[in-house]
Image (tube, rainbow, N blue to C red; front, side, top):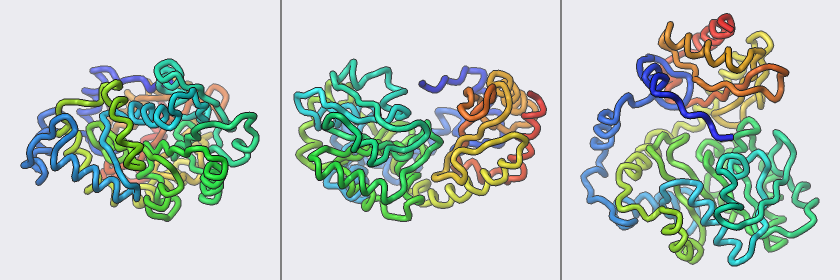
Length: 366
């Protein structure tokens, strides 16, 4: 279920606020965004052209080193990178490809895996539970690829424990099955494991990471894996409209995110855990998971989703504290609502006590 885009009025309201609960402090205009990028030292370099450029290649090399994989290639959009990777691993077959039923590939890309790439998806796994070895052992057929989303966003940003992830990797290798990590939030996941990114990625054959989520970039991603595998995807990069003339604004913002946000991921996770503990005292609230695995978690509240959304916008208008504008039906509280909370540098502008007080005021409006 794709997230609803905010209206122009909601974007304007968000920009007029002075505090924001989720993510990173917003840049309020295109001018502000471009001027910030222009201040980066790499901005003095030449523009990349059709994927070739010193600054772009430096970013790719830095990404490959962080992930501990031979090659990393910049892609304009994560879904394109992942579709190409899965098509590449499946060769001229239809797969099948194992995806969790709550995964991004299963829910948010309009069935692109099947409709666009001609692959057959096996939706495997229990609700609100990361993929497990037992799920793979119970398969009636051998897949070509297994996709593990780290973390599983729709399940509350949950992660499999380390031993479970190692067991999945070992099963795939023993069976001759490729393992691909959907690491849209992999940067945010590493602190949970207490292991370097390269150690996590060593379990997989290929890895995708995003630049615009936890790192706050404009857009873009990396696809990392063996050199021959990445090179063989060149036709798919063109077919999926990824061979863009120049990518330099996205590249600059990615470098900025790696420099400023990646070192703070462990602190963001600890702040999320502290906030979750404080929010648990809200009347009727439930947190999923508790404690959070990453810097993100679900807050379930005993309120009608539509009324809660109206209350969130009213609270922003009245106090200048933007708590969000999305409220979905809760899967844990009958008739209740669920909101996602994601901690980034915007949390520098408020205390946990202020955030809890703001949520109490919102619930009083419902």
